[in-house]
Length: 153
Image (tube, rainbow, N blue to C red):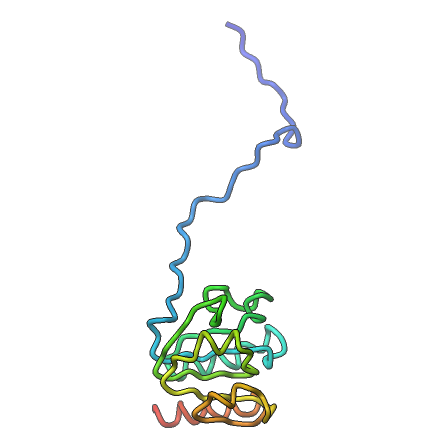
């Protein structure tokens, strides 16, 4: 029996190891949420989403988004509300920087109380909102977070 130690260059190996198997994360069921804070294009860029996430945390709410936010990969698709996302009916739906396109309204119209925050006083979202705040979300949301934290202690 003859022993041999073949020389094998790493570049000659065509098979690459695959990533270890990981079970996929459970999808978010926004339909079970009592409070939803949803963000839209008014947030301007991905780095600003934290502003709205602070409000969701303060309220004990689930975070959701309009389609453009999910299409851009700023939040996972499972957090999309609208005709091509989830249809929700929480006790409170806070729409932050969402204009109110019909496709989004279809997904949240069953909400018991709708609060809209948008700098455009003529945004369609105000037609369905129970409470509307016309203002810059970058000023309004941090003030709301502080007030919620103060009230909740």
